[in-house]
Length: 191
Image 1 (cartoon, rainbow, N blue to C red):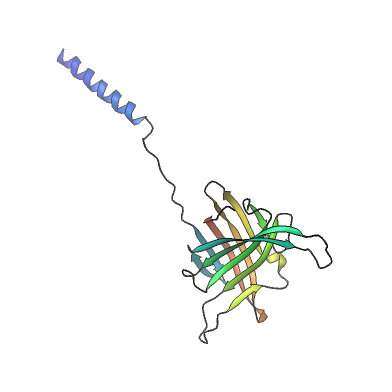
Image 2: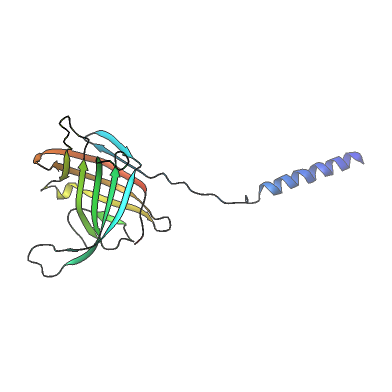
Protein backbone atom coordinates (compact mmCIF):
# COMPACT_ATOMS: atom_id res chain seq x y z
CA UNK A 1 0.00 0.00 0.00
CA UNK A 2 2.87 2.35 0.82
CA UNK A 3 4.24 1.59 -2.61
CA UNK A 4 1.04 2.88 -4.25
CA UNK A 5 0.91 5.95 -1.97
CA UNK A 6 4.43 6.92 -2.89
CA UNK A 7 3.64 6.54 -6.61
CA UNK A 8 0.49 8.60 -6.16
CA UNK A 9 2.37 11.39 -4.33
CA UNK A 10 5.13 11.37 -6.95
CA UNK A 11 2.63 11.48 -9.83
CA UNK A 12 0.70 14.33 -8.19
CA UNK A 13 3.94 16.28 -7.61
CA UNK A 14 5.05 15.77 -11.22
CA UNK A 15 1.63 16.83 -12.56
CA UNK A 16 1.72 19.96 -10.38
CA UNK A 17 5.16 20.93 -11.69
CA UNK A 18 4.08 20.40 -15.29
CA UNK A 19 0.92 22.44 -14.75
CA UNK A 20 2.82 25.32 -13.13
CA UNK A 21 5.45 25.37 -15.89
CA UNK A 22 2.74 25.77 -18.56
CA UNK A 23 1.25 28.91 -17.02
CA UNK A 24 2.05 32.37 -18.35
CA UNK A 25 4.66 34.14 -16.24
CA UNK A 26 3.27 36.84 -14.00
CA UNK A 27 4.44 40.43 -14.45
CA UNK A 28 5.49 42.39 -17.48
CA UNK A 29 8.57 43.17 -19.47
CA UNK A 30 9.96 46.29 -21.08
CA UNK A 31 11.76 46.54 -24.42
CA UNK A 32 14.92 48.59 -24.03
CA UNK A 33 15.78 50.49 -27.21
CA UNK A 34 19.36 51.42 -28.03
CA UNK A 35 19.24 54.15 -30.70
CA UNK A 36 22.29 54.15 -32.96
CA UNK A 37 23.52 55.70 -36.19
CA UNK A 38 26.36 54.13 -38.20
CA UNK A 39 27.99 55.14 -41.47
CA UNK A 40 31.21 54.94 -43.42
CA UNK A 41 32.60 58.45 -43.92
CA UNK A 42 35.21 58.14 -46.66
CA UNK A 43 35.51 54.47 -45.65
CA UNK A 44 36.12 55.32 -41.97
CA UNK A 45 33.51 53.78 -39.69
CA UNK A 46 31.55 56.35 -37.68
CA UNK A 47 28.95 55.59 -35.02
CA UNK A 48 27.00 57.54 -32.42
CA UNK A 49 24.17 57.14 -29.95
CA UNK A 50 23.75 60.90 -29.39
CA UNK A 51 20.83 62.39 -31.38
CA UNK A 52 18.48 65.33 -31.54
CA UNK A 53 15.20 65.39 -33.49
CA UNK A 54 13.43 68.73 -33.93
CA UNK A 55 10.32 69.87 -35.76
CA UNK A 56 11.21 73.31 -37.14
CA UNK A 57 7.70 74.24 -38.29
CA UNK A 58 6.01 74.67 -41.65
CA UNK A 59 7.75 75.82 -44.83
CA UNK A 60 6.67 76.59 -48.38
CA UNK A 61 8.33 74.77 -51.27
CA UNK A 62 8.26 76.15 -54.82
CA UNK A 63 9.47 73.69 -57.45
CA UNK A 64 10.91 76.58 -59.47
CA UNK A 65 10.98 80.38 -59.47
CA UNK A 66 8.06 80.70 -61.90
CA UNK A 67 5.62 78.75 -59.66
CA UNK A 68 2.74 80.68 -58.17
CA UNK A 69 1.60 77.81 -55.96
CA UNK A 70 3.66 76.28 -53.21
CA UNK A 71 3.59 72.97 -51.39
CA UNK A 72 3.37 73.20 -47.61
CA UNK A 73 5.73 70.87 -45.77
CA UNK A 74 6.83 70.42 -42.19
CA UNK A 75 10.59 70.80 -41.73
CA UNK A 76 12.32 68.35 -39.37
CA UNK A 77 15.99 68.24 -38.43
CA UNK A 78 17.88 65.13 -37.35
CA UNK A 79 21.26 65.82 -35.78
CA UNK A 80 23.72 63.09 -34.82
CA UNK A 81 26.58 64.37 -32.67
CA UNK A 82 30.08 62.89 -32.66
CA UNK A 83 30.27 63.81 -28.97
CA UNK A 84 27.49 65.17 -26.78
CA UNK A 85 26.34 68.54 -28.20
CA UNK A 86 29.63 69.04 -30.04
CA UNK A 87 30.21 71.06 -33.18
CA UNK A 88 31.24 67.89 -35.03
CA UNK A 89 28.07 66.30 -36.37
CA UNK A 90 25.91 64.95 -39.16
CA UNK A 91 22.76 66.95 -39.79
CA UNK A 92 19.88 66.13 -42.13
CA UNK A 93 16.95 68.49 -42.68
CA UNK A 94 13.88 66.98 -44.31
CA UNK A 95 10.74 68.64 -45.58
CA UNK A 96 7.91 66.15 -44.97
CA UNK A 97 4.21 66.24 -45.72
CA UNK A 98 3.30 65.13 -42.20
CA UNK A 99 5.77 65.00 -39.29
CA UNK A 100 3.66 62.25 -37.70
CA UNK A 101 3.98 59.97 -40.75
CA UNK A 102 7.67 59.92 -41.66
CA UNK A 103 7.87 56.58 -43.46
CA UNK A 104 9.27 56.96 -46.98
CA UNK A 105 12.21 57.64 -49.25
CA UNK A 106 13.55 61.19 -49.42
CA UNK A 107 16.00 62.70 -51.91
CA UNK A 108 16.94 66.17 -53.12
CA UNK A 109 14.30 65.77 -55.83
CA UNK A 110 11.04 66.59 -54.04
CA UNK A 111 8.01 64.34 -54.38
CA UNK A 112 4.51 64.54 -52.94
CA UNK A 113 5.98 63.06 -49.73
CA UNK A 114 8.72 65.74 -49.45
CA UNK A 115 12.48 65.85 -49.88
CA UNK A 116 15.90 66.58 -48.43
CA UNK A 117 16.37 70.28 -47.74
CA UNK A 118 19.96 69.96 -46.50
CA UNK A 119 22.52 67.31 -45.60
CA UNK A 120 25.65 68.46 -43.75
CA UNK A 121 28.76 67.02 -42.14
CA UNK A 122 30.91 69.12 -39.81
CA UNK A 123 34.21 67.40 -39.10
CA UNK A 124 36.74 67.75 -36.28
CA UNK A 125 38.90 70.89 -36.44
CA UNK A 126 42.10 70.88 -38.45
CA UNK A 127 45.44 71.90 -37.00
CA UNK A 128 44.56 75.50 -37.98
CA UNK A 129 41.40 75.18 -35.81
CA UNK A 130 39.08 75.38 -38.82
CA UNK A 131 36.10 73.01 -38.92
CA UNK A 132 35.73 71.33 -42.33
CA UNK A 133 32.10 71.84 -43.35
CA UNK A 134 30.55 69.67 -46.05
CA UNK A 135 27.14 70.17 -47.63
CA UNK A 136 25.12 68.96 -50.59
CA UNK A 137 27.06 69.17 -53.85
CA UNK A 138 25.46 71.06 -56.69
CA UNK A 139 25.03 68.10 -59.05
CA UNK A 140 24.52 65.00 -56.89
CA UNK A 141 20.73 64.74 -56.77
CA UNK A 142 20.69 61.02 -57.52
CA UNK A 143 23.50 60.22 -55.08
CA UNK A 144 21.76 61.43 -51.91
CA UNK A 145 18.97 59.58 -50.13
CA UNK A 146 17.45 59.25 -46.68
CA UNK A 147 15.04 56.33 -46.31
CA UNK A 148 12.81 55.89 -43.30
CA UNK A 149 12.02 52.20 -43.62
CA UNK A 150 10.34 51.50 -40.27
CA UNK A 151 8.29 53.71 -38.01
CA UNK A 152 6.63 52.84 -34.72
CA UNK A 153 4.09 55.52 -33.89
CA UNK A 154 3.40 53.91 -30.51
CA UNK A 155 7.05 54.10 -29.46
CA UNK A 156 7.78 57.19 -31.60
CA UNK A 157 10.91 55.72 -33.19
CA UNK A 158 12.18 55.47 -36.77
CA UNK A 159 14.79 53.29 -38.49
CA UNK A 160 16.30 53.41 -41.95
CA UNK A 161 19.26 53.99 -44.25
CA UNK A 162 21.04 56.91 -45.89
CA UNK A 163 23.86 57.84 -48.24
CA UNK A 164 25.35 61.10 -49.55
CA UNK A 165 28.20 62.67 -51.44
CA UNK A 166 28.95 66.05 -49.87
CA UNK A 167 31.22 68.89 -50.98
CA UNK A 168 33.34 71.17 -48.82
CA UNK A 169 31.65 74.57 -48.62
CA UNK A 170 34.56 76.41 -50.26
CA UNK A 171 35.46 73.83 -52.89
CA UNK A 172 33.06 71.62 -54.87
CA UNK A 173 36.04 69.43 -55.81
CA UNK A 174 36.78 68.45 -52.19
CA UNK A 175 34.23 65.75 -51.38
CA UNK A 176 33.38 63.15 -48.79
CA UNK A 177 31.35 60.02 -49.35
CA UNK A 178 28.94 58.91 -46.67
CA UNK A 179 27.93 55.33 -47.44
CA UNK A 180 26.27 52.37 -45.74
CA UNK A 181 24.46 54.73 -43.40
CA UNK A 182 21.87 53.25 -41.09
CA UNK A 183 19.95 54.42 -38.06
CA UNK A 184 17.92 52.30 -35.67
CA UNK A 185 15.31 53.23 -33.09
CA UNK A 186 15.85 56.99 -33.44
CA UNK A 187 13.30 58.69 -31.15
CA UNK A 188 11.15 61.51 -32.49
CA UNK A 189 8.52 63.74 -30.96
CA UNK A 190 5.02 63.62 -32.39
CA UNK A 191 3.78 67.07 -33.32
